[in-house]
Figure 1: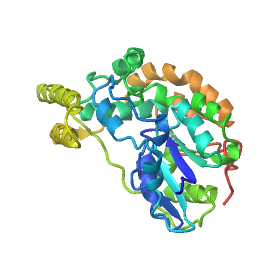
Figure 2: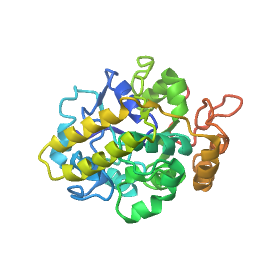
Figure 3: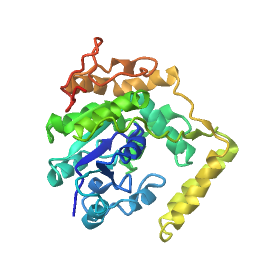
Length: 330
């Protein structure tokens, strides 16, 4: 049975869903029908209990048996390259090691996003779903050490998931740089055709076929009303009870509540400069490490706004560096 030739390994809330869907449209690529199988996140079955709201239902989604994982790629046409996308692999250093042990030749695609913007998007996702109990992103980030100690799953680690410098530094001890491609989220959003051609070159498949990404779902941002707070409490209680219900029954209940929460929600509100000022210190040292690890400039992430675009390793004169992964000229 086949194993994947390449993996989109992160980061969460950095365009991996849209990227997975776009790559599935290339005739020389076969993407797993389950977008996030999470196979490399555990050795054996995932935990039966979770600390955070909804964690147990997420653990139920894991495809952890190897036969089931290999079956995801069984329908791949002969000669195609197989891939899957689980954006938590980058953050999970044990998952990186498991990938190295099973498929050391795999090519790895990493998308990085301004870590403050990524944290805010992650928090908004869970707030709008009624699972995040803290209505302020700065306070939610401050609560992260207590949540980690209490066993909340990694998707609640708004700060930790954005420490790309640490994550890539570890990844490069396991995989040669020519097996790793690092892309900016803004590159994928602003110049999708160029970004997709870069990925196709990295995967040694024909370029010029993919030129757009599907529109990403924009998470609604419900106001902190009495109705939202009340439904959210029911949602978190339903997530806790759902682990005792058979099959997808628990998930169907929480999905209905999430739809209710988002019915009148506004579009996701941008992070404010005041919030950025409070959150940047969490990431500043790691951003400097990321610059060293990739030999690239990420100083724009320390500014009031995310830069409108630009390639990882780009220079003002447009000459791209090629030290942070297998980057080809095209």
